[in-house]
Image (cartoon, rainbow, N blue to C red):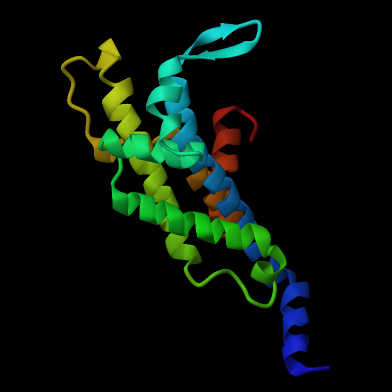
Length: 198
């Protein structure tokens, strides 16, 4: 057998190699969907006016002010976020790199978990994805949620101390799925202690 083919099969069949790559790929693809939902869903929810027998009712301004910007709801939403100064052109370029990495993982899954391994920029794209998700979520919290919540009237809020729910969820996923044994079990063990289950 050709040594390269043999090495490729050996890596693919080795759980110590394939399992972490498959888990990392799965978390990345899930994280990308969370990011897309933050980009599109937050804006759509902002224009939500209620529901009736036919489903959700969205203010017509959503179509006029957001969706009309691009055929893609994601890129239309990114343009709206840019206009609101939530993100920059550089952030859109980062999103494009994050998306390209996601597409490589989704369309070439067996290569990514097998012989080729994860894309060379995987870790950077993952870090950038979480940072962009945090930037967008913190913008919504500081520019929409806090100003419309009277509980925060006159209170100083440190943006650095804000940990948005989707970012926390991503951190939990990474720690549980990819952390060492102690880190992987930490949240489970603490939950069981706090709820009297252990």
